[in-house]
Image (cartoon, rainbow, N blue to C red):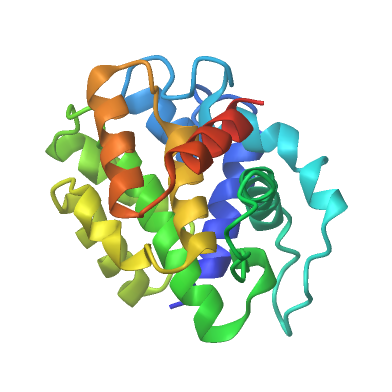
Length: 228
């Protein structure tokens, strides 16, 4: 399964839609179908689609994206990675007594490491869509269909369908607590797709941050980065 390519396609499609309600890509689908108007953060104005649409020409340009043989230019993943990196740097600068950990975001990885990282971020996006507690079987099918438009890999489609159908549980992401880059990107992607002013979604984000062992100050930095 090539999850990195799928994730890049979805992020680009969402960014090109320019709005969470326009129906383009994962951001458009989830914004338009799951919450009626927009799943985006109140300050972002356009959910994942609108936010990444603005980022593709910005943050990605300030960070080199390693070439991958036979692969695409991972500009959208670089944008997501840059946001997580900037938030982590801002938090780290306030932690004089803590040694800096290795921080490699998904756009800086290749092979099996990139796949593991991409799986985590894609899982986070799918999970975030369920955070308001209103997803039903029809909506699950629509999400699966939309995701399926971006891959012809039966194994990957089966995995996606299983992720969409499983109950929401922030504890599913506890396995990534030991890698600060994965944890930061999983949390950042989640913040970008939900309305943190709603109780159910706010509770999910706080639970997710706890499961990922994200320091409260880093959690705040990531949320501020998503809303910038």
